[in-house]
Amino acid sequence: MNIIKEISPLVDLALKEDCANNDVTSKSLSLKGKTASAVLIAKNDGVLCGLEIFKYVLLKLSKNFKFQTFKKDGDKLEKGDVILKVKGPAAELLAGERTALNFLQKLSGISTITNRFVSFIKGSKAAIIDTRKTIPGYRNVSKYAVRCGGGKNHRMNLSDMVLIKDNHLALIDDLTQKVKDIRKKYKKLQILIECEYQRQVRDAIAAKADIIMLDNMKPADLKKMVKLIRDNSTKDYKPQIEISGGVNFKTIKNYAKLGIERISIGMITHSAPSLDISLEVEIHK
Image (cartoon, rainbow, N blue to C red; front, side, top):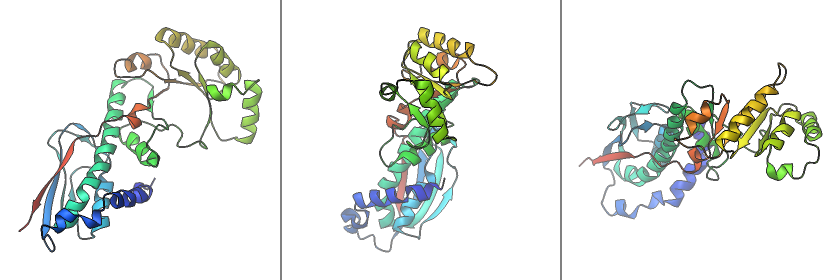
């Protein structure tokens, strides 16, 4: 994925939203013709994401910025690390810094919390998977941040995978036949069935779903359902198991120990706190 191509419309929107071309404060300080230098510094430990976007925001305001980079997306950061140095026109730097930092801090927050979950299950065969719970318009770049943090992407949109949830199940009389019909029409797509209790799990097994999601189940029930799925797996049919709901830093290790393949977590994109990164600016007289 070309991250700049994906983010370009959002950058334009963000700069317009902030009236970056009409920074009345900078205009009042007679900055025309003056240059500035700045250092981008990590204020907390984390995982970097969005550095090229940060640079792109400034370059949208002026092509005269020059950068010296010391880190790249996906790199671990320690408090105090210098990420980047930049030099260019002072007025444009001050006008664009907030927009540039907003992208960088938010995306680094997503990659950081994703990486923390990944570290908790190191050594297991489970993967941390994101969801579609993203800020509208930020889907692709948010999922890019998940990958920078070591996570994996669930479906990118509604056309990527057949995901049969409770609202869909209520409309289906014969799940096995429905799955057969779907496979004829969408031969290359995986089929995931979301299950909240045992009967649905048995139906999903009978229908030979590619992925069986165990959603919001109690720990004891999860163990039983994982055993049920494994006991009914064969050489030709072994569905992946996904756990979703109730996943946090206290519970995730126990979930990973169940030997499942996927743990999906909505909060890594919809509730990740921004990573504290600052831009220290010096105006040249």
